[in-house]
Image (cartoon, rainbow, N blue to C red; front, side, top):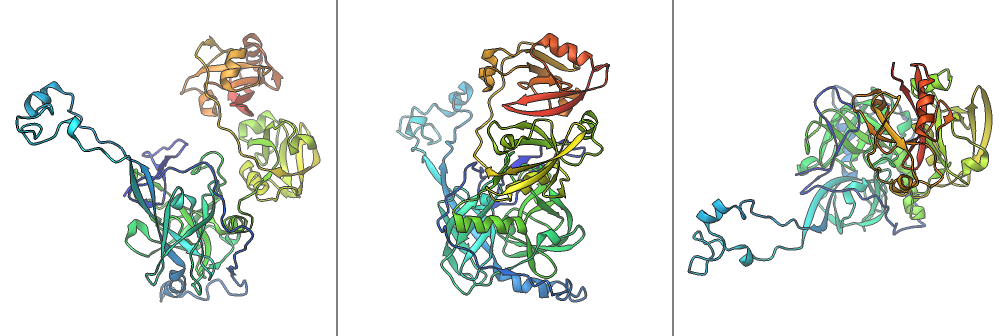
Length: 523
């Protein structure tokens, strides 16, 4: 078995760890960036929702164990096997062109009897043609969410599959139809032609708290239906980039063992209610097993996405038309903010909903519809879950004043890939560890930026510098220093030196998107 592995993009003090999708199978999978067209648009899924009147612990006795909780849910968790055709890799003999090897073992020209070299091996020109494609098999799990055959699973379990089969608890096997998928949340919906199935009961992940008991159900390593127990280690985990920078993440973290093959399986609470869809693990080695750090998509998020896929044929998300970033302690100091709450507006899309409503670069969004915005990820998820066309009410801080702005959301569009970095001419900079040069029209074109873009382009950053630690990278364009525009290297150096050894606030254009970066200047 192997597994899709993604490096965690953050420093680790201990041994190198990797983030792995909890998908079992015969070969690695690559996650596509695009979406899938739904086949059952216009329908809705009739699901079972928990009755809040039931006390939290009415089905569990620690003396008797968790059997009363698990047994009713086991038939609702299924095995999913998939296959797809992939390009075959041609095996090549590493010694084929080595003269020493050819002298003693032949060169494929035959040994007088037409059988190749003296060991009966054929030469390269006699080898049978390798197949151009081969079938790749993989395994995962899924959760039956309705009695008429709708199944919720991960997108990475079924992505690219040409054949999907579902095995039920009673060993019946059905060919499944992919209703639709949403790669940005790593969710997919399947349908099998069966009725009177056991469907899981939906709980509310919003009520899940750190320390709650949870159980993970799935089919790890293809050994068969397996249940593991743990607690909720954390909620609201973001920034893991399992599906890339455009992903929507709000994971429940648990130490209940999640292993390859568990992807798409159920995470339930002690009432037997679904609170999450198991998705990923943090593991010490490629293809490794559980290290006690697993992640599940919260069911409140999964439920809304599933209903959109089935009803509308796609997932639509609200769109403000801004690029936001976290308010770090350094940025809070630079903007004279009392706390690190809120989301800093690094850029505003021209003619987008936010621009039309008057939102500006440098604004800090501190509240949405009367509720405090704790961080930028929270705001991003809240906007994404709000239907396009709906008006939201923002409270922003601009300078020292607060004001209210109402914005009618658009629909989130697809975004293009970022441009590549430019050439390498270097000019000394007043900022320690950073080299810059003038931004010419040619370099702007290489970066995919408008010709009228002003600033200086970063040509090199010392990896040990505070600038690198803050995220400054080669190819970034510095457009402002301490809120003052800079158009030349001289203007940039004078502005940095004017910081008098204190932290300097940069407005950085990274592949067409601006954001603020606070960096300590050279003493």
